[in-house]
Length: 310
Image (cartoon, rainbow, N blue to C red; front, side, top):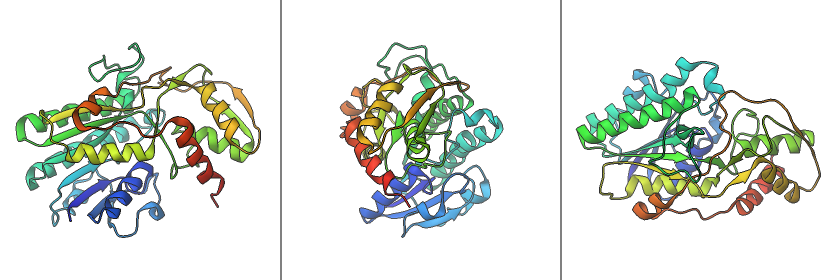
């Protein structure tokens, strides 16, 4: 049995990761401030610490534990939302990373996995985007993710910690917060379609994304923590190398839902990327990860789950 720390386990990705680790008979300690997650999402069997990952007092509660790996999934998790309070975004996404890296150094934890984002690339690159493509963040959130990657490299170079930044593309699947209409393109559109029979799209129908299913994301986290790579710091795209426009996503939903809905394209959001999809050949080559679900397979699973929510 190994012992792992998962931050953000009351949220979508963190809860799925914590559950998978428990299913593998590991001990799991979690931190969450419940600002956007829900206590009932935390899998039964976790040791729970409720608090901010950017507070030293919270990190000090980890002192009794020695972790085989730290999965830092928590953080303010929306580009749009980062404009509301850039200071909170900085603390949530960067200060927290520094505190946890320092904890890893002091306690001898040799593996650190971070939930980064494709948003670090911005809109300046031809697609598909590779890990060495230009970085042109358009939101405070994206700036913070890129800054955290820089600190991770420093801790790898200077203190010998294996750090892995996973640049998640648009993650979707069962467990996503359907009530949060500012984060997660799939969940936003699906929630509106189910609740209102109407979808309001902020932005053009030809915008595009790369949608990656939650089970594939969890698998990337596990492989990232345990792989033996040549370099101590690695940044990987977690993606499908598939371009899906907003219109294509909505029409795929329309085919799968047992009712029709109307669509309105109106308005825009600050800092929104027009379009991106990412190459995943580096993570496949280095640690053997590749997506197991295409959009139609994953969306069917998510829609079946969403239609049965009470």
